[in-house]
Amino acid sequence: MLDVKELTMSFGGFRAVDHCSFSVDAGTITGLVGPNGAGKTTLFNLIAGAFQPSSGTIRFQGEDVTKLSTDELFHRGLVRTFQIPHEFHRLSTLENLMLVPPKQSGESLLSNWLRFGAVRAQEEVVRQRAMETLEFLELTHVATERAGNLSGGQKKLLELGRTMMTDAKLVLLDEPAAGVNRTLLRKLEEKIQILNQERGYTFILIEHDMEMIEKLCDPVICMAEGQVLISGDFQTVRSDPRVLEAYLGE
Ligand code: ADP
Image 1 (cartoon, rainbow, N blue to C red):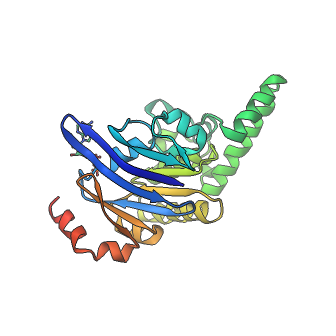
Image 2: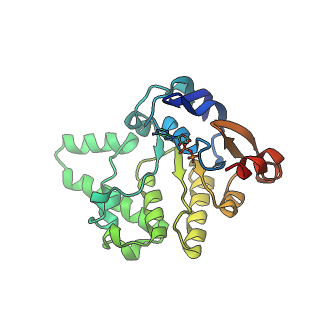
Image 3: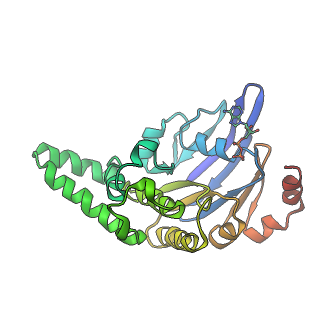
């Protein structure tokens, strides 16, 4: 699904991502781990089209997408989750889902509806989908709550919900466990697993919570100094002495 080759990104003279190569199979949940400063976030920014690499290529579903913008990638189903933007904190949970721009099937549906002037009907379709998403995430009880008032875990579930409004194929999750209490963490893990196994989503997630990585991810890729140090199943990666060394040098 994703093929990254010799990707390099420099800040000034410093290579944050340094000839990094790996691939991600459709249907997997790939964990991206590594010490602080390893280049994980920069790599996510490159894959999502927020940064342009100095060199190297990114292929998504067989096509070269190296030079595509975040917007173009989003339309192809490659989505990176972000915290709910500040200005959306005052909107309700439901409204936050309804505001996700339509794409793919949704987009043609939208233009069809607009052509016939049936904007209200379209709004109803989006509302229905947003309600189903809330139900799946078990957030129906906070549908009318301001997003800014949600707990850390509920906000992460809402972020996941926003990707569900887009027919995403590959979702990049940046530290989904950060700031989430244990109960909601289990729920978040369960929802990610269902989206992966039953709804065909492929995920790459950056995470420091090793319990979550062990539970969800196969394979796990460990980065250090801008490169892939090792990839494999959780136990293989965890027991590799180079990984321990990389974390000790943090
Ligand atoms: P990680 O997410 O693994 O902690 P990052 O991708 O955030 O790593 O950072 C990799 C390296 O690139 C770090 O040394 C960081 O200081 C540097 N870096 C990241 N972003 C910038 C930037 N905008 N300008 C300069 N250096 C940066």
